[in-house]
Image (cartoon, rainbow, N blue to C red):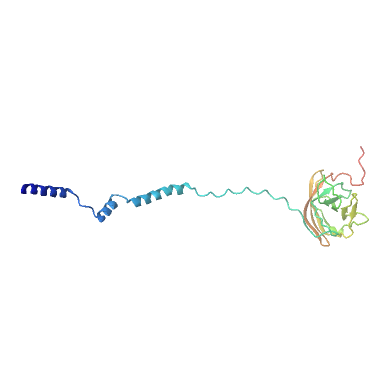
Length: 228
Protein backbone atom coordinates (compact mmCIF):
# COMPACT_ATOMS: atom_id res chain seq x y z
CA UNK A 1 0.00 0.00 0.00
CA UNK A 2 2.74 2.47 0.86
CA UNK A 3 4.53 1.75 -2.39
CA UNK A 4 1.40 2.46 -4.45
CA UNK A 5 0.66 5.69 -2.56
CA UNK A 6 4.22 6.96 -3.01
CA UNK A 7 4.10 6.23 -6.74
CA UNK A 8 0.88 8.19 -7.06
CA UNK A 9 2.37 11.20 -5.28
CA UNK A 10 5.40 11.15 -7.57
CA UNK A 11 3.13 11.09 -10.63
CA UNK A 12 1.11 14.08 -9.37
CA UNK A 13 4.27 16.11 -8.64
CA UNK A 14 5.73 15.29 -12.08
CA UNK A 15 2.55 16.41 -13.91
CA UNK A 16 2.23 19.57 -11.82
CA UNK A 17 5.87 20.56 -12.43
CA UNK A 18 5.43 20.36 -16.17
CA UNK A 19 2.58 22.93 -16.14
CA UNK A 20 3.79 26.52 -16.80
CA UNK A 21 2.31 29.04 -14.43
CA UNK A 22 -0.17 31.59 -15.96
CA UNK A 23 1.40 34.78 -17.25
CA UNK A 24 0.69 37.91 -15.35
CA UNK A 25 -0.92 40.96 -17.14
CA UNK A 26 2.36 42.83 -16.92
CA UNK A 27 4.23 40.14 -18.77
CA UNK A 28 1.59 39.98 -21.51
CA UNK A 29 1.80 43.73 -22.05
CA UNK A 30 5.60 43.63 -22.16
CA UNK A 31 5.59 40.89 -24.78
CA UNK A 32 3.10 42.79 -26.89
CA UNK A 33 5.24 45.94 -26.82
CA UNK A 34 8.39 44.01 -27.67
CA UNK A 35 6.94 41.58 -30.18
CA UNK A 36 4.77 43.97 -32.28
CA UNK A 37 1.72 46.22 -32.38
CA UNK A 38 -1.35 45.59 -30.33
CA UNK A 39 -4.56 44.84 -32.23
CA UNK A 40 -5.86 48.41 -31.58
CA UNK A 41 -2.61 49.94 -32.78
CA UNK A 42 -2.61 47.76 -35.89
CA UNK A 43 -6.19 48.78 -36.71
CA UNK A 44 -5.29 52.43 -36.19
CA UNK A 45 -2.26 52.09 -38.48
CA UNK A 46 -4.35 50.37 -41.13
CA UNK A 47 -6.94 53.12 -40.91
CA UNK A 48 -4.31 55.81 -41.28
CA UNK A 49 -2.55 53.92 -44.05
CA UNK A 50 -5.83 53.55 -45.95
CA UNK A 51 -6.77 57.23 -45.55
CA UNK A 52 -3.48 58.52 -46.97
CA UNK A 53 -3.99 57.18 -50.51
CA UNK A 54 -7.55 58.56 -50.56
CA UNK A 55 -6.31 62.00 -49.59
CA UNK A 56 -3.54 61.92 -52.16
CA UNK A 57 -5.99 60.76 -54.80
CA UNK A 58 -7.83 64.05 -54.53
CA UNK A 59 -5.68 66.36 -56.65
CA UNK A 60 -5.79 70.01 -55.62
CA UNK A 61 -8.27 72.03 -57.61
CA UNK A 62 -6.58 73.69 -60.53
CA UNK A 63 -7.15 77.41 -60.94
CA UNK A 64 -9.87 78.19 -63.44
CA UNK A 65 -8.60 78.88 -66.90
CA UNK A 66 -8.28 82.55 -67.52
CA UNK A 67 -11.17 83.96 -69.48
CA UNK A 68 -10.57 84.76 -73.12
CA UNK A 69 -9.68 88.40 -73.60
CA UNK A 70 -12.73 90.49 -74.41
CA UNK A 71 -12.93 91.93 -77.84
CA UNK A 72 -12.01 95.54 -78.16
CA UNK A 73 -14.95 97.83 -77.51
CA UNK A 74 -16.30 99.79 -80.44
CA UNK A 75 -15.03 103.35 -80.81
CA UNK A 76 -16.86 105.72 -78.53
CA UNK A 77 -19.24 108.11 -80.27
CA UNK A 78 -19.54 111.82 -79.60
CA UNK A 79 -20.90 113.09 -76.30
CA UNK A 80 -24.44 114.44 -76.56
CA UNK A 81 -26.51 116.27 -73.92
CA UNK A 82 -29.65 118.38 -74.06
CA UNK A 83 -32.13 118.70 -76.93
CA UNK A 84 -32.94 120.81 -79.98
CA UNK A 85 -36.46 122.25 -79.98
CA UNK A 86 -37.35 119.86 -77.18
CA UNK A 87 -36.26 116.70 -78.99
CA UNK A 88 -33.00 114.72 -78.67
CA UNK A 89 -30.51 114.50 -81.50
CA UNK A 90 -27.57 112.07 -81.41
CA UNK A 91 -25.78 111.81 -84.79
CA UNK A 92 -23.92 108.58 -85.53
CA UNK A 93 -21.80 109.98 -88.35
CA UNK A 94 -21.64 112.25 -91.38
CA UNK A 95 -22.09 112.04 -95.14
CA UNK A 96 -20.84 113.97 -98.14
CA UNK A 97 -23.53 113.85 -100.83
CA UNK A 98 -22.35 116.67 -103.11
CA UNK A 99 -18.95 117.70 -104.39
CA UNK A 100 -17.14 120.83 -103.22
CA UNK A 101 -17.43 124.20 -104.90
CA UNK A 102 -14.70 126.31 -106.44
CA UNK A 103 -13.84 127.67 -102.99
CA UNK A 104 -13.02 124.14 -101.78
CA UNK A 105 -16.02 123.99 -99.45
CA UNK A 106 -18.68 121.34 -99.22
CA UNK A 107 -21.55 120.42 -96.92
CA UNK A 108 -21.24 117.62 -94.37
CA UNK A 109 -24.58 116.20 -93.23
CA UNK A 110 -24.69 114.72 -89.73
CA UNK A 111 -27.59 112.41 -89.02
CA UNK A 112 -28.62 109.48 -86.85
CA UNK A 113 -27.43 106.89 -89.40
CA UNK A 114 -24.27 108.34 -90.92
CA UNK A 115 -24.01 106.00 -93.90
CA UNK A 116 -24.64 106.33 -97.61
CA UNK A 117 -27.23 103.59 -97.81
CA UNK A 118 -29.75 105.09 -95.37
CA UNK A 119 -31.62 108.38 -95.66
CA UNK A 120 -33.13 110.09 -92.61
CA UNK A 121 -36.79 109.22 -92.17
CA UNK A 122 -39.70 111.35 -90.99
CA UNK A 123 -39.06 112.99 -87.62
CA UNK A 124 -35.29 112.49 -87.68
CA UNK A 125 -32.86 115.39 -87.52
CA UNK A 126 -30.10 116.50 -89.87
CA UNK A 127 -27.30 118.94 -88.97
CA UNK A 128 -25.57 120.54 -91.97
CA UNK A 129 -22.06 122.01 -91.76
CA UNK A 130 -20.21 123.89 -94.51
CA UNK A 131 -16.46 123.31 -94.28
CA UNK A 132 -13.32 123.50 -96.38
CA UNK A 133 -12.61 119.87 -97.25
CA UNK A 134 -8.94 119.66 -96.33
CA UNK A 135 -6.98 118.06 -93.51
CA UNK A 136 -6.57 120.30 -90.47
CA UNK A 137 -9.14 122.90 -91.52
CA UNK A 138 -10.88 124.61 -88.56
CA UNK A 139 -13.91 126.86 -88.55
CA UNK A 140 -15.70 128.82 -85.83
CA UNK A 141 -19.36 127.82 -85.97
CA UNK A 142 -20.44 131.25 -84.80
CA UNK A 143 -18.90 132.76 -87.93
CA UNK A 144 -21.07 130.73 -90.32
CA UNK A 145 -24.36 132.01 -91.67
CA UNK A 146 -27.16 130.27 -89.79
CA UNK A 147 -29.96 128.59 -91.63
CA UNK A 148 -33.62 129.10 -90.81
CA UNK A 149 -37.04 129.25 -92.38
CA UNK A 150 -35.58 130.85 -95.52
CA UNK A 151 -32.98 128.19 -96.19
CA UNK A 152 -30.13 126.07 -94.90
CA UNK A 153 -27.44 128.77 -94.79
CA UNK A 154 -23.91 127.53 -93.95
CA UNK A 155 -24.87 125.77 -90.73
CA UNK A 156 -28.36 124.54 -89.93
CA UNK A 157 -30.49 121.97 -88.17
CA UNK A 158 -33.68 120.54 -89.63
CA UNK A 159 -36.12 117.71 -89.05
CA UNK A 160 -37.50 115.66 -91.89
CA UNK A 161 -41.25 116.10 -92.41
CA UNK A 162 -43.77 113.40 -93.38
CA UNK A 163 -43.26 114.05 -97.11
CA UNK A 164 -39.47 114.36 -96.90
CA UNK A 165 -39.48 118.16 -96.72
CA UNK A 166 -37.03 119.57 -94.16
CA UNK A 167 -38.35 121.86 -91.44
CA UNK A 168 -35.44 124.12 -90.44
CA UNK A 169 -35.09 125.18 -86.82
CA UNK A 170 -35.12 128.91 -86.08
CA UNK A 171 -33.80 128.39 -82.53
CA UNK A 172 -30.63 126.56 -83.55
CA UNK A 173 -27.79 129.04 -82.99
CA UNK A 174 -24.58 127.03 -82.66
CA UNK A 175 -21.27 128.18 -81.25
CA UNK A 176 -18.02 126.27 -80.98
CA UNK A 177 -15.62 124.84 -83.52
CA UNK A 178 -15.32 122.12 -86.14
CA UNK A 179 -12.01 120.60 -87.26
CA UNK A 180 -11.62 118.50 -90.39
CA UNK A 181 -9.27 115.74 -89.20
CA UNK A 182 -9.20 113.68 -92.41
CA UNK A 183 -10.51 114.72 -95.83
CA UNK A 184 -10.25 111.93 -98.43
CA UNK A 185 -10.99 112.79 -102.06
CA UNK A 186 -12.17 109.36 -103.21
CA UNK A 187 -15.75 108.16 -103.34
CA UNK A 188 -16.80 105.67 -100.64
CA UNK A 189 -13.90 106.67 -98.42
CA UNK A 190 -14.07 107.51 -94.71
CA UNK A 191 -13.08 110.94 -93.45
CA UNK A 192 -13.25 112.32 -89.94
CA UNK A 193 -14.23 115.57 -88.23
CA UNK A 194 -13.99 116.72 -84.64
CA UNK A 195 -16.82 118.86 -83.37
CA UNK A 196 -17.41 120.96 -80.26
CA UNK A 197 -20.85 122.52 -80.63
CA UNK A 198 -23.33 124.15 -78.28
CA UNK A 199 -26.76 125.65 -78.90
CA UNK A 200 -28.82 126.51 -75.82
CA UNK A 201 -28.74 123.44 -73.56
CA UNK A 202 -27.75 121.18 -76.45
CA UNK A 203 -24.10 120.08 -76.62
CA UNK A 204 -22.33 117.84 -79.12
CA UNK A 205 -18.61 117.06 -78.84
CA UNK A 206 -16.23 114.39 -80.11
CA UNK A 207 -15.12 112.68 -83.32
CA UNK A 208 -17.44 111.63 -86.13
CA UNK A 209 -16.66 109.54 -89.22
CA UNK A 210 -17.73 111.05 -92.52
CA UNK A 211 -18.59 108.83 -95.50
CA UNK A 212 -17.93 110.28 -98.95
CA UNK A 213 -21.02 109.02 -100.79
CA UNK A 214 -19.75 110.92 -103.85
CA UNK A 215 -16.27 112.08 -104.69
CA UNK A 216 -15.61 115.51 -103.18
CA UNK A 217 -14.16 116.41 -106.59
CA UNK A 218 -17.57 115.91 -108.21
CA UNK A 219 -19.71 118.86 -109.27
CA UNK A 220 -21.43 120.57 -106.32
CA UNK A 221 -25.18 120.65 -105.92
CA UNK A 222 -26.65 122.77 -108.68
CA UNK A 223 -23.30 122.87 -110.48
CA UNK A 224 -22.67 122.26 -114.14
CA UNK A 225 -22.85 118.67 -115.26
CA UNK A 226 -20.05 117.20 -117.27
CA UNK A 227 -20.77 116.77 -120.97
CA UNK A 228 -20.93 113.19 -122.15
